[in-house]
Length: 430
Image (cartoon, rainbow, N blue to C red; front, side, top):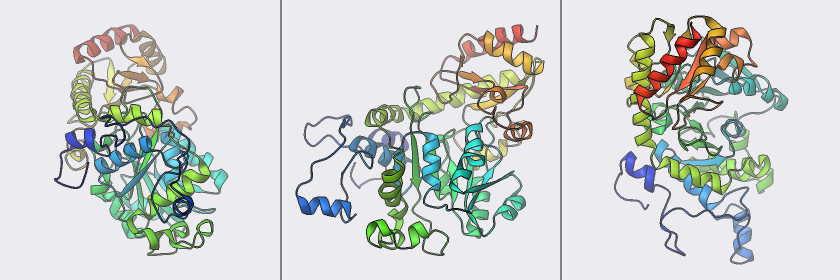
């Protein structure tokens, strides 16, 4: 698409980042299954490697299919630039890489996917990075946790597994006051339900594996930069504000302005970390994004129906869906996720851990998998799987107690989903 009218989301999810192939006229974005690209001449090659010209060099850095997906997601999120990589976990490391350094820390929400908690509390220590976990509902505690060595604040828009909604604007105000960027994982909400950049986020990360692809076929990740953070305002981010030796002293923040972070992520991050998305994965994801709004509407509609039924069932202790009026996060929907509270939540089964195990084993339509955001409805017992590595205290803080199961509501007939849960609960609580 070229510059012109302001298009609606439904149009952009199909057309953004994609034009008919100039060589063949192909309407769908081709899968450019190639590792390298022929330079026009020696001067062209030199200009590309010197970042004096934008183009394709080697598919570890950029690929036309992957670039089309990155552009589409950037436009849908309202960002300045973006990159795609091999998984959601890769996206989180890629997001932090230009910001962090030995001895520096990130302040993160306690309400995160268990794998993210493990990545931040264990794996990044090997880089010399640290983490502080804070309840982001306590803004004073968040502000107090940020110190001179903090380089980022990290949260999820709709937190996995409980479906809790973060007050992104309030958290962004705290981050701004401290002069550090806010990174928001928007996987569970997608840009259709939530736009973190408009609420003050600096960076948005995704596991494109989930709702964006929507069919459980490929893994992937994305990092979208708002282009609004001033990397030159302090000496906290030398990768962007100081001369880069690998590019003859180029200062990314000075030379590239709003695109500094994105170009650094390609020229340094993807070059050296190699967390590359493959073009076939990008193609599957592009096709998934084309129907994102339609699927998310159905996901939300079904989630409301199923969560309401569960809340009224005497075999259930409680339901954490933020779309229920009983939820303490219900009032946040209008300002954070005005199109709905997503389709991810937990519920507690009377009978505790053993009843949860029986429930999971008794379901027929729900698939027992370690994934979310599929067109199919999914279930998992987080405490024994995705959040198993955490301490009991961390599990409780994340909303992954032993007596709860996590649901990712799909786009099937909601009456069939309720019937499946009904028969499984009968067996689990007999």
